Image (cartoon, rainbow, N blue to C red; front, top):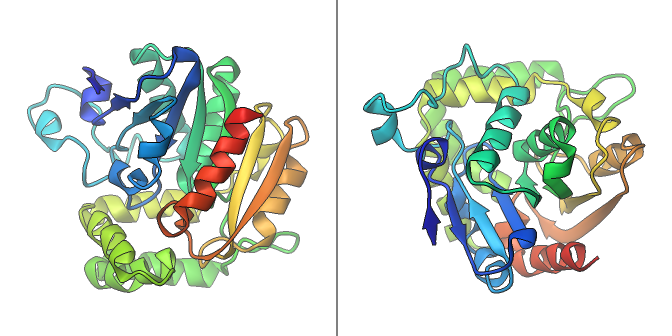
Length: 280
């Protein structure tokens, strides 16, 4: 395991595995998550590849000791972090600092769109994108099914603001799905580590954002992984994304499991897809 300094220290970045530098896989977690949520798929990946893990600065696992000692300015600032674009900048800077020249980026949920944006900024840094439960927009419109009406999003944000901990308790098992309560508990603990004000700010970025225009600019080959029943992302979204990625070779892989976290609840199936992408 290799540990690094600067931004990578703040983000708890690690390089695992012994594969060649041309076989780097970068795993980006989603809202309420942290790098430990990848633990079911990492052991298999690191047998043949270098695997990069890190924590976004909104995560409760972000290195607050470094932040509080004023040794960096990488902490979450809602005035600075007002769109996924800023996170994409952080991703590119992180990989540059780690001297990674090219990688396969696996992004869960919001990290999927972050990866898309980053690939537009630096196409040669990303050889392939694997998006798990990603969505460019969550609010419905006349020609688009995002999964939520605007009033539902308003209520969601209001609940996060006023009752974050009870909301997290209710949301975690619904989001994770599956038949193993301990997996929902794992996400629940990770989600509740977030500072409530940070959780609200990031939720606004996600649920009020519209990144549909990004899709046609993506040129990196992309695999979009979806489940058969995702509380957060309707089944039509991955096909919408594929259709709009007019400049990228893309495909959709559906995993027959409930929930938004197939890398927890159906990790073997997710690994099968990742392996197929790596071998293609």
